[in-house]
Image (tube, rainbow over all chains, first blue to last red):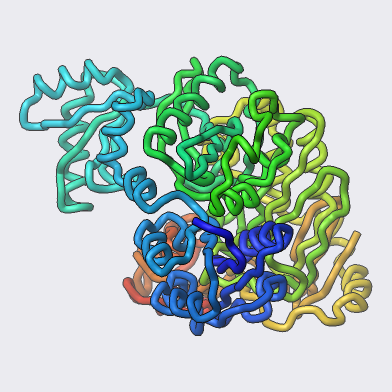
Length: 492
Length: 107
């Protein structure tokens, strides 16, 4: 810990750009990294220097510690910010940089390791009395013991393969009569999928919401929170729309969840920014999900309503700043208004969210009150398949939730992204759903209620196709440089 | 309204929504899904499962192929009724974008 002068930005895309801005505002020099496909990308132009990492795959480039570490040393970087994804939650990476006297702007490697280990984390939860869904080990060879354990956990319950994921070996059991058969078949599936028939059972939480708490700790053992975010709107376990504060959740529950997050993270001596995730049921019971030991994609909504800059705070904390100096009036601070973030992806929401790589022939963002765009691309940029297909994050804030939704809709309707299919129309339709407008979302909302979403060009537009072509050709100057790859279904 | 023609496609912002439509209505009609001759990999991916074989009759909506890209699985169903003339891809193979998974017999 000491003064930082030059910082390595260990990431790409929108988050690299966002990190560079915070560093430069604090007067720090920045060093960017770029792979072959990222040559000339926005983040490399913003940074003071840039290091080329030959290749395209994450393994050859942004995960390639053997190349990155010596380069950072050679350029005399005294700190590194990992952003999210890539090496951000790899304890060994944090250790390697710290060993080379390069400060890791993030939690200590011991915290990353401790919170990342499922069994260790379970012990911690007990120690710090963090609520978790009731669970039990499963012994299928003893039916009466199994039934007793199930009674204790409570129905409905979920049987899960102990050594697997992805829904394989998983069974939802609603009543005692189907327990034994479900356990036998789940164990068979677990054995064939993972080579291990061991199961565990867990209380099934009906229609849960995803609520998470933003925490911030310093290197002197102090830790505070900046409220909650509601992130229930997800597809394929990835968040699509996130907001703060959470609608339809009592202040008493919000306070309880936040205080459990603070107790847990303070207990393990967590420093820097982090997130504790929970599932919350209809009765506002909450259950621990996991800790993300890094800055999160959706940190922007917290920044908007609390009026803070989490990345700048991280950078100051890494240089030894105390929370009491950064936020002397924390107890008087309250979230103001409402903020929503939409993740704009190059993907086809009508075709299983398949990525839609291609050249963005035109990108135009609206100019609006209360709008923040985080992006690493512009007209002419290529969305490839080597990395995440996210084009941008669009964050709005307004005086309340209703105004915030109206503002985000307005901004999406004034966004132009040409050259590939995006989820811009899908995002608009999500925001029009009555349950979303009423703040009644749950984790499987998009999966169940938007399952059959499709989007065809209106007949009126197709009728005018030939007129459009005439108009359009005058606007193509400097358009696409590379051919887009049409999905086989786009012809429909 | 804003529009831009790129190759054989027109990208349009129409009443606040974004669309990519075929520039030439004739070719669009000719190549409609009902008449598709082949199923093409939309992006580079790994073939996990092929549900059909040469000469097999399929109905619209029948599963054809399951692929994996970016650690996610995508399954593709038949856009039409017809008979499979040729299966090009092999299970386990990594295929480039544009490769034909299967071809149908001409109607």
